[in-house]
Image (cartoon, rainbow, N blue to C red):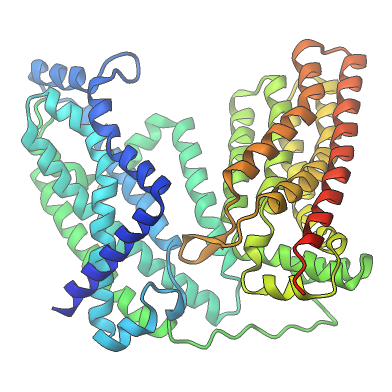
Length: 519
């Protein structure tokens, strides 16, 4: 069967890539070794999973709370995998592993079937770690290893159905956005924000989240586990319902995914025409502002930086999600004043790092053209800095304002807001210097539809050390002195260090880029 041959080929290719990237392989193997370690370590309030299972076996009466907790865990995993599957959609045949060669050799149906077998097998193996960690010790402690095997069966069906349903919905959203001229980066940006929002709500209201997630049909996926687990009542309707939902979602999702892939992958992806005289939307307006305020070469480089981040916004969204979670927690429960101040510093440094720490990797094939162009290193650095700051400064100021507004100390709030802008500007220059000193030239395909440049670890460590030194005066003033003179001195010291370090680092980055010139 050609589909099995394609699945074997793709699996062997991924294994070879893991051998070529030993660090990634060690991390994944380490995750697989977490399960046997956590089985014997105490969790939560000091009771291990084996103790919980032993208590279930000794009670002799069904526990509704445990059943709801396990069912909600399965349902939450289904939602997470479905959203992740929607984010991993590929939009052109060139982005698919194997590309048009395997499609031409085996046919579209056999290729998609083989690719699905390879992908889902890998997901079942990797994500089953959470079943082993979450319920493995409980089942073994209760003396019911058969319950663990049945739970793995239900989880495998959960994994396949969630992935296929998410992929089908993701391609449908992309096709709808493409037909109506929408920007595909908006749905792809909303997906991680949705994950972060759901996780934040779940942590804020755990009882309500458990009760809602344990409801059918998603709560049915844990039903096979309850058949042989002592202390939990079996649910025959849940077993049949979970099996039916899993089969329908898997089969229907695959058929819909195949039909959508035939339509989307072979389309002509032309860029929509825009009226340059009357730009609409934030992006064209920002481009018009850049072209009016700075030189055309610098504006072009800055605009390319903005466009790349708008097309691949995942790192920036993940970074900003921490600020949003802090803001939600502050509104609900309040935050200590020093935590809000440190959150403002984090947002300033993190936003600059995401946008400017590895500029050369995002250039791709254009890098050779840039290095052979008459542009100087100073123009390149200014262009990268303008593009990064046009996004980083407003975003960090907005999130810092929301986080600091809930503080009780007015002088500390004012000092936090005063330090954010200069710290972001200085961190951008330091990030550019670290990125060109220890560059990484290739972009990392973390998701099929998104690629961004992962900086080297030495660049990241060096950047963080410099930012710790720059933020030290402000941190010392926040930690050891809350009086107005001390805060003013700490803020002034951090602002002066940030701006001076940013200027020095920017000059170094420009000289370094001049040394990369190709002739």
